[in-house]
Image (tube, rainbow, N blue to C red):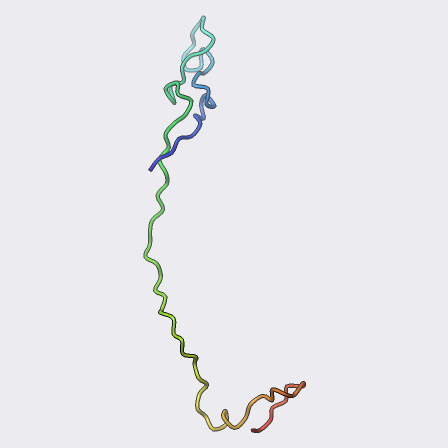
Length: 89
């Protein structure tokens, strides 16, 4: 793909001052050789390399369960306590 941009030599006017390219006498301006007198140039779009997207595992609706340890199941944080003390169930 490509797009057009204003000519950086003639600043989009299509003409440059006389003597810009070679010393000449008489004319006030001459056609811009960079853009061919159009005032714009065609610029190729930069193409970024495309990499495959990383693997994203499918959504799992199951919620991980805590390990089944006797000490873990018999102790927990008290939800009704304001000081977050550990209580035995």
